[in-house]
Amino acid sequence: MNDRTPQFLSSIHPLIPSPLEGAGACTLCPRRCGARRAEGQLGYCRSGTGFALGAICTHRGEEPPICGPHGIANVFFARCNMQCVFCQNHQISRNEGPIIERQLSLEEAVRCIEAALGRGVGAVGFVSPSHCIPQMKAIIAALRDRQPKPAFVMNTNAYDTVETLASLDGLIDAYLPDLKYMDAELAARYSDAPDYPAVATRAIAEMFRQKGTRLAIADSGYVESGLTIRHLVLPGHVENSKLCLRWIADTLSTDVHVSLMAQYRPTPAVAGHPHLGRCLRPDEYQEVLDELHRLGFWRGWTQALASPSSYQPDFTQSHPFERA
Picture: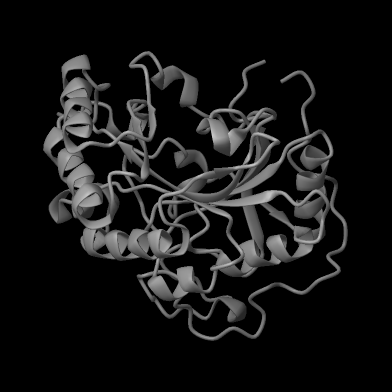
């Protein structure tokens, strides 16, 4: 992309109070840690009540209907309610240690998004918003009456409560959840979330209840409504991937759009790990692809094994996914 939207505008006084002002004990995500964030108490995600963001940028690397012809305006929330040891966004997602984050007002965040929408971008994506649902809702409310209305996409790890997702029915146009694990031991070891399989399957079932199998695409080329389930194949864990696909097929439908990703690339945090310290082998991805086809999935996307280097962001740069 030749023109670059500034990630963050100069500081201006917020005109709207924090969306969490007056909130009590936090139960936004399945951890239900009870932190009183409006009083300055930090819970598992170490997040407050404001708009702490890693980046706002136009991104072209999502699935075709998500990024459309001009990219999607992605809002990357800082920190996370999971702590995946292999996270590609580790610069902004850590809950401990150094992190890249900027504190914006709602008005600043909306102005950054508006700049992208003004260039023809037709969708706004919220990346890892599970611990910042009020902030996400506030941005949606600020943009909802804009014409043409952008599609609102929730790009989530699926570690979400059914109650939270039900509150988004009618607000979120398209869900883009990960289904990371059906193996609780792996979820505990790699993401500090032993209940992930139970939580994520309930969450994705709720997304399916809201959206079904149809992925509606507007004349603009952007998604209007729907559900796409992502799964990242981890090296050394082919059986976990097969279990994830089988759950979707057996519990939801093989008509669901599935994005089977081969883009895993080790970060410094897992260098030397017996499994996670290497990229995916061709035979591993092919075995999972064979299962995808055996189960009868026919809608969605796969990736070339040459893709890992294309999806590694650097949040110290003016645009995390583009190199100067």
